[in-house]
Length: 438
Image (cartoon, rainbow, N blue to C red; front, side, top):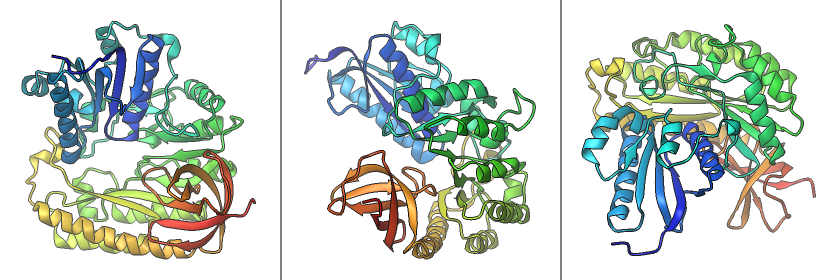
């Protein structure tokens, strides 16, 4: 029995996982709105008739969060708090049959490329004329731009090709059109995302075309920042760095998940590169683009990772002095190449190794931040939190990187404004400063 009145045709979209899922949810929401649905993202009102959960299936923790979220909403359905629960995204793509058996309370499961079928189930029409249209879930001054779907890389640990399929690039014309629409709506920064940015264009242009895409996007009037996420080191297109130097609105920032610092483990991971080649690449990137901020992601506890392998990674991180770094513990994923190996590093040891790397990185981050004290940086104001305006420099991406804090009492700023900020002090992952525009 229903315990409250639900708003008919109101949909609550809940997003889990990475920026690619955020993008997909925004496209879904635009389609729903065009079909006269009242749609909200992660609504706090609990009055939606329908909940659609966009799940993540990347690693164990993400899968568990997705399952917990599904169970929470199916329980709400059983209590009459909602009428329908639909599940889409990576977890649903990968484990659809098992989920249907284990959680029959869900009304339907959909994969990562099932948007038209999901809409049809809701008695809505897929509107081709809306291709590129989205309802942003981010603050209105920045947005993610997915330039390709899927991945052709053979990395042994990764299940993304199982969930997202083969690499498919979007055309430059389509991406330019999408970006112009975003900019006309007030977006000042776009973050290019894909499973692998550096593979962009090989399928449709028969060459690596990321630099061509960047030139076209950079020409768009009113677009202040373009940021690059998820580049692959093997076969990195160096002409991208030339464009980055030439164009002032391309951030000197590169997110390149390198995964490990041991050549033996990199070979086991089927990454197509050695630590030595990686170090050469990092050196060349920094030489070509002075002042670039490099962000990377690593994995601790890959099968057979010895203490010597870990020490090699530790020493490499210490030498490399990455501006930003994150590290995951290895997750043993079904149907991946690595699943055939013995997951022989205990979970406690995986976590210890990850913590040791993060302790090292914290010290590196603190030292690098101290070098910024007294300098002035162009800063984009993202939000207000307590007594502070919170912003970012071109060297920082939302949610994952450093932030710049400015006291509200010192000056009045608008969210989405660019201001010049002189850094007065620095902590491990935050910079504190004041606006020099006023």
